[in-house]
Length: 114
Image (cartoon, rainbow, N blue to C red):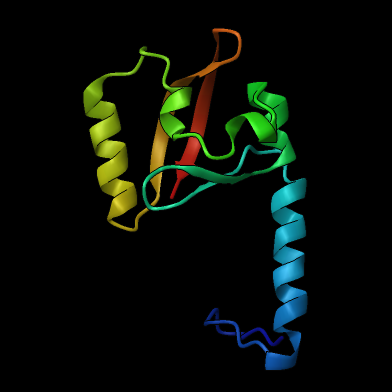
C-alpha cells in the first residue's frame, strides 16, 4: 500500500487486498461505535459488537430484521424521509435520532449514516 504525499488517493498492491479487507473487517468489529450493515431494503445483514452492547439487541435477534425494529416513534416522519433520501443518494446522513432498544428502552444516537 502506498500513500500519495499530496493527499491524493491511496494505491493498493493487488497482493495486499486480502490483508486490507481483513484489517477493515477487524476495525469495524473493534470500533466503539455501533455499526449496522443492511441490504438495499434496510434488512440487517451484519452488526458489530458495539451495536449489541449499545442497543441491547443480540446479533441473532437483529439479523434479518428491518431497521424499522429500531424505530421509537419519537422522531418525525420528515427526519426519516430526509435520512433515507440522503442515504439512498449515496451520501452520509448526519444527525441525531432516538432508537428503541429491548425491552422498550430508548437510545439517543448521534452520528453519520451511509
